[in-house]
Image (tube, rainbow, N blue to C red):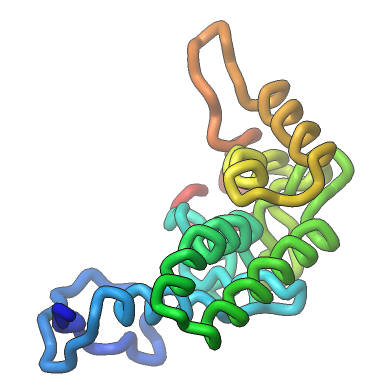
Length: 202
């Protein structure tokens, strides 16, 4: 099979939170399958709610301070990871990779359990748990009371509870779809200097 080089670059120093830098092709090589496995397994780091650690941001890099101290967890990332695992499983079966078939199947199942146990507020799915325990995307949140991503991805990631998914989408429509202006908000209300400090988004 074709082997391709991995890219490499200097790791962040202890005081660095982020860096724009250059990355180079290294000498180590691996198959595309091996590249994919490394990418997926890199994300298998979980916090106290058994959800993926958010670090300096997930899809929304403007939430770069939510989990910067290493304890914040992303609900959206949990759903996205579940979706990736389920979609990647057929490739693991193709390679008869029994070890990763079991790992990815078990992880996808546990993610669904953790999301439903900790991240559903009765009407929709919350967005994240910050380093200090603050919940983003909850009914009590001053900003980002509801976020579109976990509502949409509850369906895309095949979450098992159909009633919760329907409620999540209904809530997203009610709070985030602005038909008058022809827009769908990513979340509401917005962050400002007086609300929780989520990062660049403030």
